[in-house]
Length: 141
Image 1 (spheres, one colour):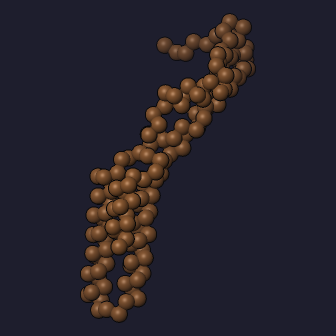
Image 2 (image 1 turned 90 degrees about the vertical axis):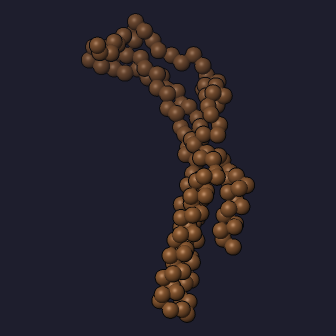
Protein backbone atom coordinates (compact mmCIF):
# COMPACT_ATOMS: atom_id res chain seq x y z
CA UNK A 1 0.00 0.00 0.00
CA UNK A 2 1.47 3.33 -1.00
CA UNK A 3 1.08 6.82 0.38
CA UNK A 4 -2.22 8.58 -0.16
CA UNK A 5 -2.01 12.21 -1.21
CA UNK A 6 -4.77 14.77 -1.19
CA UNK A 7 -4.74 17.92 -3.24
CA UNK A 8 -4.44 21.22 -1.39
CA UNK A 9 -8.07 22.10 -2.12
CA UNK A 10 -9.11 18.81 -0.41
CA UNK A 11 -6.80 18.88 2.64
CA UNK A 12 -4.73 21.87 3.75
CA UNK A 13 -2.07 21.01 6.34
CA UNK A 14 -1.35 23.77 8.85
CA UNK A 15 0.48 24.02 12.13
CA UNK A 16 -1.95 25.07 14.84
CA UNK A 17 0.66 26.37 17.29
CA UNK A 18 2.85 29.42 17.00
CA UNK A 19 6.61 29.12 16.63
CA UNK A 20 7.12 30.20 20.24
CA UNK A 21 4.57 27.72 21.65
CA UNK A 22 6.04 24.86 19.63
CA UNK A 23 9.53 25.57 21.00
CA UNK A 24 8.22 25.83 24.58
CA UNK A 25 6.31 22.55 24.30
CA UNK A 26 9.32 20.83 22.76
CA UNK A 27 11.58 21.99 25.60
CA UNK A 28 9.00 20.87 28.17
CA UNK A 29 8.83 17.31 26.78
CA UNK A 30 12.52 16.99 25.93
CA UNK A 31 14.92 15.17 28.26
CA UNK A 32 17.16 17.95 29.60
CA UNK A 33 20.14 15.81 30.63
CA UNK A 34 20.42 13.78 27.46
CA UNK A 35 23.42 13.44 25.21
CA UNK A 36 21.83 15.90 22.80
CA UNK A 37 20.86 19.47 23.63
CA UNK A 38 17.63 20.76 22.09
CA UNK A 39 18.01 24.14 20.41
CA UNK A 40 14.89 24.93 18.39
CA UNK A 41 12.13 23.71 16.12
CA UNK A 42 11.41 25.51 12.87
CA UNK A 43 8.06 25.02 11.15
CA UNK A 44 7.52 25.62 7.45
CA UNK A 45 4.20 25.35 5.67
CA UNK A 46 4.93 24.61 2.03
CA UNK A 47 2.77 24.08 -1.03
CA UNK A 48 4.36 21.60 -3.42
CA UNK A 49 3.36 21.84 -7.08
CA UNK A 50 3.32 18.66 -9.14
CA UNK A 51 1.86 17.80 -12.54
CA UNK A 52 -1.52 16.80 -11.15
CA UNK A 53 -1.94 19.72 -8.74
CA UNK A 54 -0.83 21.44 -5.53
CA UNK A 55 -0.12 19.55 -2.31
CA UNK A 56 0.09 21.02 1.18
CA UNK A 57 2.97 19.96 3.46
CA UNK A 58 4.26 20.98 6.86
CA UNK A 59 8.01 20.61 7.48
CA UNK A 60 9.43 20.47 11.01
CA UNK A 61 13.17 21.13 11.24
CA UNK A 62 14.58 20.17 14.64
CA UNK A 63 17.97 21.66 15.58
CA UNK A 64 20.01 19.81 18.20
CA UNK A 65 23.59 20.02 19.41
CA UNK A 66 25.65 17.17 20.79
CA UNK A 67 27.11 17.62 24.25
CA UNK A 68 30.76 16.75 23.90
CA UNK A 69 32.19 17.41 27.37
CA UNK A 70 32.42 13.70 28.24
CA UNK A 71 34.33 12.87 25.07
CA UNK A 72 36.67 15.80 25.61
CA UNK A 73 37.45 14.55 29.12
CA UNK A 74 37.92 10.92 28.12
CA UNK A 75 39.73 11.27 24.80
CA UNK A 76 41.23 14.69 24.13
CA UNK A 77 42.56 15.73 27.54
CA UNK A 78 44.30 12.44 28.43
CA UNK A 79 45.83 12.18 24.96
CA UNK A 80 47.13 15.75 25.24
CA UNK A 81 48.70 14.91 28.61
CA UNK A 82 50.18 11.75 27.11
CA UNK A 83 51.67 13.80 24.28
CA UNK A 84 53.25 16.29 26.69
CA UNK A 85 54.72 13.54 28.87
CA UNK A 86 55.99 11.71 25.82
CA UNK A 87 57.73 14.85 24.56
CA UNK A 88 59.22 15.50 28.01
CA UNK A 89 60.68 12.02 28.35
CA UNK A 90 62.14 12.20 24.84
CA UNK A 91 64.41 15.05 25.98
CA UNK A 92 65.31 13.47 29.34
CA UNK A 93 68.79 12.14 30.04
CA UNK A 94 68.02 8.47 30.56
CA UNK A 95 68.82 5.17 28.96
CA UNK A 96 66.58 3.96 26.12
CA UNK A 97 65.26 1.14 28.33
CA UNK A 98 64.16 3.63 31.01
CA UNK A 99 62.49 5.83 28.39
CA UNK A 100 60.55 2.87 26.98
CA UNK A 101 59.51 1.73 30.46
CA UNK A 102 58.31 5.24 31.31
CA UNK A 103 56.37 5.54 28.04
CA UNK A 104 54.65 2.19 28.68
CA UNK A 105 53.76 3.42 32.17
CA UNK A 106 52.24 6.58 30.67
CA UNK A 107 50.17 4.55 28.21
CA UNK A 108 48.88 2.29 31.01
CA UNK A 109 48.06 5.30 33.19
CA UNK A 110 46.04 6.98 30.44
CA UNK A 111 44.20 3.71 29.73
CA UNK A 112 43.39 3.29 33.42
CA UNK A 113 42.31 6.93 33.64
CA UNK A 114 39.94 6.52 30.68
CA UNK A 115 38.37 3.39 32.15
CA UNK A 116 37.89 5.15 35.51
CA UNK A 117 36.24 8.14 33.85
CA UNK A 118 33.89 5.99 31.79
CA UNK A 119 32.78 4.16 34.95
CA UNK A 120 32.42 7.25 37.15
CA UNK A 121 31.03 9.93 34.85
CA UNK A 122 27.45 10.07 33.66
CA UNK A 123 27.26 9.86 29.88
CA UNK A 124 25.39 13.13 29.63
CA UNK A 125 25.63 16.50 31.32
CA UNK A 126 26.31 20.13 30.53
CA UNK A 127 29.22 20.41 32.96
CA UNK A 128 31.63 17.73 34.18
CA UNK A 129 30.75 16.32 37.60
CA UNK A 130 32.96 17.03 40.61
CA UNK A 131 34.31 13.46 40.60
CA UNK A 132 35.47 13.96 37.01
CA UNK A 133 37.31 17.15 37.92
CA UNK A 134 38.90 15.39 40.90
CA UNK A 135 40.09 12.46 38.77
CA UNK A 136 41.56 14.81 36.18
CA UNK A 137 43.47 16.81 38.79
CA UNK A 138 44.62 13.59 40.51
CA UNK A 139 45.96 12.28 37.20
CA UNK A 140 47.83 15.52 36.36
CA UNK A 141 49.77 15.55 39.67
